[in-house]
Length: 51
Image 1 (tube, rainbow, N blue to C red):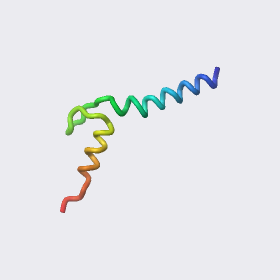
Image 2 (cartoon, rainbow, N blue to C red):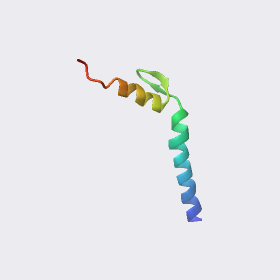
Image 3 (tube, one colour):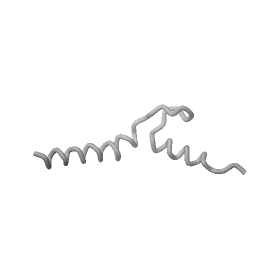
């Protein structure tokens, strides 16, 4: 039973990290409702140093 429980935990973690987090929307204080990957893309664009 232990192995099946651990396998289920791995499957749930993998689903959350690879599928759910890519599509869920969250409210960002600056960008509005965007997915976590969109938030990362937007913030990396803003990190360029000003001349």
